[in-house]
Length: 323
Ligand code: ADP
Ligand code: MG
Image (cartoon, rainbow, N blue to C red; front, top):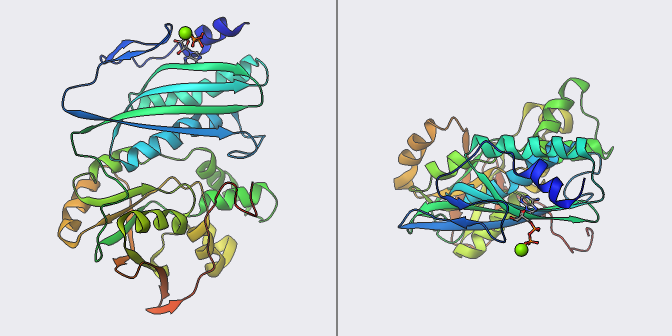
């Protein structure tokens, strides 16, 4: 199978066929025709084998995750996902691998009515770059910069399970055999909070998706919005499996610093709390208030209302200890 056969066989078969895609895969460019008075929101994310996922990750999980991390960025902007481009670099043509990879990609695309409209296919070490585009009403997007002192700090879902799974895979932690699959699912099949992102769009003052760990990503909101924050550690949403596996202290640390959660972190003014909570009910996504913003320009943490110091950092490429 050669490049063009490969593209035709694997990437042109999808059930999504959006009205706003004038010209999809097969020409020099795709042509898309968005509705008037909407913003197009664009994001790109790359996954490199051995960096963003362990080499032995299943192809379906890689496909899912490559799409999910991009949709998660759109979710953080309150956007409704619409189109994807996929640049894939493959060491060789393995049809079984590609079939499963496409399953991961297209399952998620179908769920959110997202159409693959183009891409690039090259040979080399496995790497996947996806550009995702979505729509918001004019001026109706969320950003990192609107948070105000006094706003409440919320997260969706539970924190740290993906990091726990990675610790297990790399042999640093033992998880009870009954729970390994559930925890690995969190790492391999993150759920982008697409519906929650759109639901909070009218109510949240800022939002970000959690890819590098709570402390690191909260730092981005604080910096962009020029605020500080206090996190109430007693209130962090932590799974029972993580509590049992790591104990409270290490579990909290993992929830603060572990990457790959792809939950939303967002801020809401007191006046918008009820509206936000009501809007979220239909999405079925659980949220937890984990603290409040202040004017301190610092991130602090408390347990039992008492300040505690944390030695927490998120994941950063090119930092001293990582690559
Ligand atoms: P060109 O060389 O003109 O840039 P290509 O030959 O790379 O185009 O690709 C041919 C068509 O197939 C284009 O429409 C391109 O967007 C699409 N395409 C290539 N690779 C992929 C892929 N991995 N996923 C989806 N579409 C792809
Ligand atoms: Mg061309």
